[in-house]
Image (tube, rainbow, N blue to C red):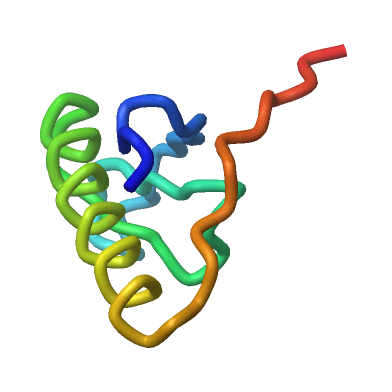
Length: 73
């Protein structure tokens, strides 16, 4: 299994109408998102969600993608 810390993520603030806090997503796993009240909490929750996603993919016989590199250009 790949190291979850090797995967890039994106964090966005959530509006008050959407509950506030921060949303985290992983470009390599479109089905994996999480949130948290703070950026650090979102990262922790996102990492937990990513680990669960990777385990579910592996359990169901799907390939886990290699970590990509985000292009900031």
